[in-house]
Length: 188
Image (cartoon, rainbow, N blue to C red; front, side):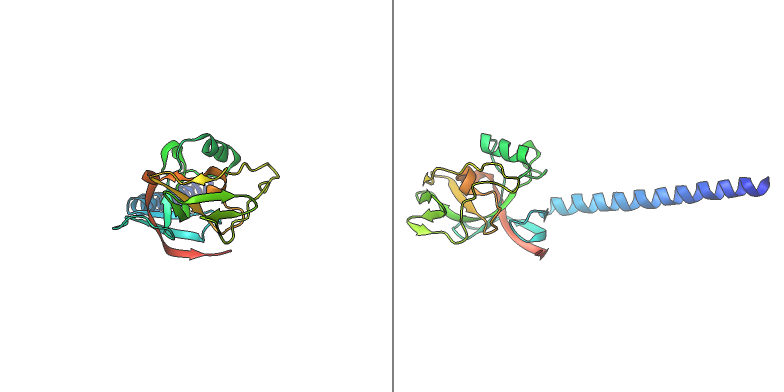
């Protein structure tokens, strides 16, 4: 009888120790995420840019063509549709959406033409074929093209399945959080 009681007590203590270990690791992980997030670190889980750890760095100069940036998408019909389709992840921007990591390929005053691919000021943009459907065979609505308005940027990713300005058009520069710097990444 005493042996059974002792075994139950030992099992209970083992469960309690296991619970404390799991709780400690969980709290440590959460604390690390909060600490890194406060320092501008972000984890990219989308294939538009290499997967892994990135850092948002405040620029000490104006944003230029060729800059890789973190940008919060505005609350538009196109972005709400993207969220509903699962193109946008959970994150720190308005409406709890993750910032996008994209390359600035055009700025204010540049002319965008979109047909089968993208042309900027008449020059073709590499790796810019416009998809008719997404990975689940849903129709993709493309941006009509036009002049990039003042205070806006046209964004692109060379990843063929990227959701970028080919589909949602230019975004306001005031949504830019900063330059995107790789810390530790890997490609699949």
